[in-house]
Length: 357
Image 1 (tube, rainbow, N blue to C red):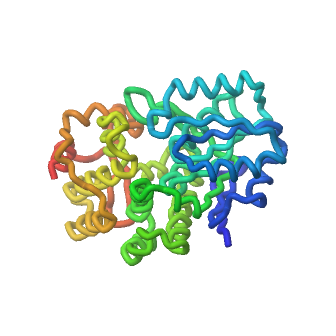
Image 2 (cartoon, rainbow, N blue to C red):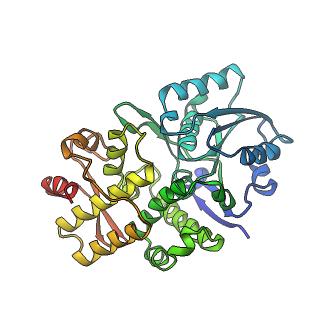
């Protein structure tokens, strides 16, 4: 049986459906009604079976168009953004029409930014097909593209009309992609959700083997945490910034590798290691808590090595971070396991020390 959550404030409120075989008429058709045309945006990494399933549900209700992007972070580019906008214009899409994003975080991010920009805003739906997108990027209304200076530096806050999370599609994921998504699940456990932290420790084998009930539960708990935070702070003026735990450094690592050498979740795992070490060096968490965090990341076999990264090489990317305010870098650190803070009061030397360990 599917579970439901809601995120967003008032008119921006939207429904999130989570469950096995959630890509179904009962969930999708109510979101399609009233839209004459629908553009499905996906990428060549999404199994044909999933696209066929979504298309089959859409076709009786709306005229369907498709754009298939090349799989990978490089598809989230200015050129791809322009190409999709031109496609919409040439095919006479108007404000009553719809975009459906079917894919991982890259597809969801660029689809949402296109939807926010075309004619100053048309509706869009998220159907995330990776664990990372299901627990993170599909919820919260952050949309973006990358530029050469860094990741997600151009974008908008724009909520979807709805989110459909079908847990059965995770069976199609390569193991590396699935594990990458677990990094974001661990993030929620570390910043706010003690129950999720305990669950991740206790159910390692079941989670790694993708047992249905446990996977549904960690997805639900992750989204529950995120929905609560983003509903309080839709545009990252306060508490929402804690969702970036590990991301200042993770994004720098991704940019350093030109988005080709490492998956997002793999970079975030390294970023969380760095942020946890800084938290310890700043005397915010105990050595025991620091060990708990590193042990949890190791339980899921993340590569936490940092030998290949030099502070001076990562520094330009770190200091282009979106959390810089009035020229000061704000870091998301931990006061304890499952309690995050945002602070600009830290010893800059600890950034370098954390990268050396």
